[in-house]
Image (cartoon, rainbow, N blue to C red):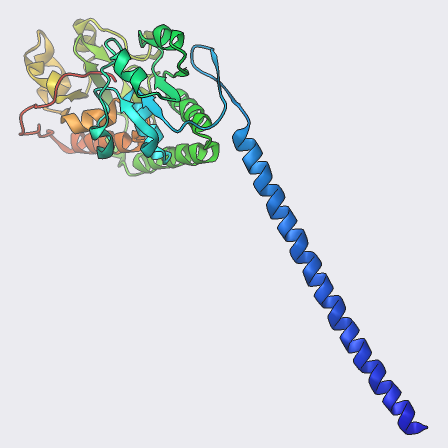
Length: 337
């Protein structure tokens, strides 16, 4: 009797052990099934979101609908070209404007002219899913009449740059990547500002963007970077982002530092009345070589590099004369692009 009871207890314990193991196995199996279903639902949701048409309102106020992220892109503005590449879709570019030269891989793409002389037939033959360009491009109406999707964007201020990054991210189906890119740009500009010694802050600056002369006003992305670096722009916001100036205005403002591209720097000290400007008298003129000018005048991903270049200029000007580049100017004229 006792042996039978012992055997029964042993069997009961084994059954309980097996039952517990079976229950644990079923629980694990149920969990795995649930996780698989969740992964499938997430994949279906992502696929559905990707397939959903994108409604993008460009800087003309025109809403452009894209049924899917584009696989073939034409960019007619260097800053937009650089943005597409920085967001990881450089391989989708099939044609660019004549000034798009960065990153190096875009230099082998078909060159389609500029905002005023775009090679329309050549562009159409590339069969782009979308064309990115500036709002001042003359070809917008013509391209749309030919059935092409056109997104026109115009970054002038830093807020514009942030918005345009978001728009391009929306076009590419990469909104999160666009947000991260802006945060990186903003953070690097802050680092450049923090690197400046007190002696390099508060200097009055005239930044010439092109002959005319045209200056970078306080409301432009260049002016806003200067402000974040602690510089005092001689051009107030009410003059607009890139105003054409009377040269006498600059003489009267008497900036302590002048920033100018190498092409426009030739003969600058000899301009009528400019010999008395502090920046000219004390040789505190920062002259950008062509590659630097490209970085500085393009409102896009390389604005953090632009801030570093301007910070370098302010540091050098704070301690003495600034050395001009010794290499002759070799790049073609381009101005703001």
